[in-house]
Length: 189
Image (cartoon, rainbow, N blue to C red; front, side, top):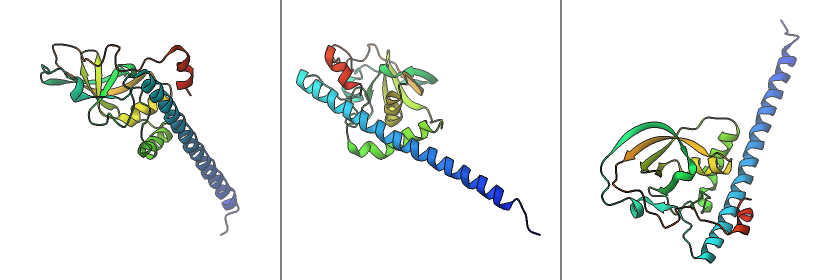
């Protein structure tokens, strides 16, 4: 027997698929635009840091972890302010101190993560090492960069605490590059 409603349901399903595809396509385009703006902001920030003769790269963990650091312990899942993340374990040349992507090779992975976030998917927590009040990224550089780009001030993280007699030492003013008064607006594109 012929189903008189067959075309009706097929059209609804087709329309739903088109809406979903359109939503996903728009999320990809927004993620690509966001990546380009983050890369541009990073280039401007890098130029300003270069002119001011200040470091702009994400510090390498080996450069700043105190020699007297002792064994650590797992501290669990925490919400960590992104501004407290100042170093990386092995990826310091891929991102600057404000987590702007520095290399074009980061684009595809960065865009995929941003697209997933824009579509509302939950991402796994990043992995951080805490030394004093500061944090070192073990895993999740791209997720942190995307979170910064989307205006998040905090991020969920699996934290391991490294016991040290002193706090991290990364320059006199911390890891973030302090921009001159007029330059802050340029770097926020």
